[in-house]
Amino acid sequence: MKYAICNELFVHGNPTLKELTASRFWTLAEAAQCAAALGYRGLEIAPFTLGPDPVALPARDRQRLRQEVESTGLHVVGLHWLLAGTQGLHLTDPDPAVRRRTAEHVTRLVDLCADLGGSIMVWGSPFQRSLRPGVTPARADAHAIEVWESVLPLCKARGVTIALEPLTPAETDFVTTAEQARRLIRRVNHTNFRLHLDTKAMSSEGTPIPQIVRDAADVLVHFHANDPNLRGPGDGDLDHGPIAAALHELGYRGWVSVEVFDFRPDPATIGRRAIDYLTRTYGAPA
Image (cartoon, rainbow, N blue to C red; front, side):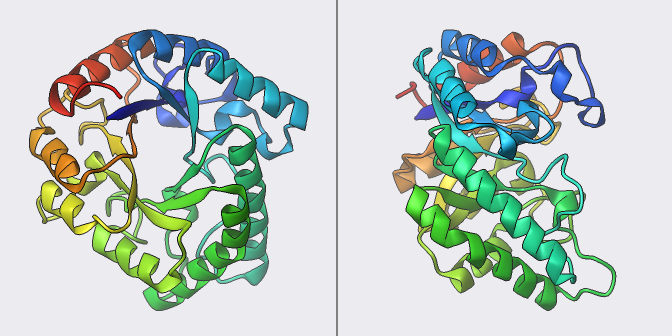
């Protein structure tokens, strides 16, 4: 397995998600050095950790950041939390101007992702996709597909895949099961639009997680390992053994990336516990 870790957990102190600001985050170089020392080989980046306007980063800064990560032996896996921290952007908004601005922003994120060496963009961002008042689920699907289809030609040109992430009903009312995500992926029907699965999110479904994984065999491209208690894999009650077995059964060769939402006690401890558990449960790092 290829193990990665999300960079927003490399933060000073123990803030809540609402308290996160760019000034709290470790630099990418610091995060990469720590992750590499722990045994990870990939770093997944939340754009808001790069500053208030990450898509405006000049080419020289993008090249520098990529070199800083790669000099540690890590690769930039890609981006997640794509729309977090933005204003006036929304995937399913009924206003065409809002959807157009959203597509334009994501287009710039595609370039940022590729420039940093990444190839995956996880589309989560629950607050910027939940249904607006009066928007039916069918209209929301149509609005979202419009945005995705407008950015996919650039994704193909730059070698970036959008990975749609089902989230829990507690977070959003748009795409809350893997089956709903797979249905949209079939409708879009593009090689650069695939599925991301997250063990915390899958825990909210009635279907056993290993079965969800097996059912996603044809479209699964990226995977987050964590626990429903918002902590890392192995730091809660969720048994990842059957989940790991399902991934191996599929011959999954993508990244298994650690994402947490509880930043206690500290980044190094979280990362160490997680990779120790992943190595025991999912297998030795590739």
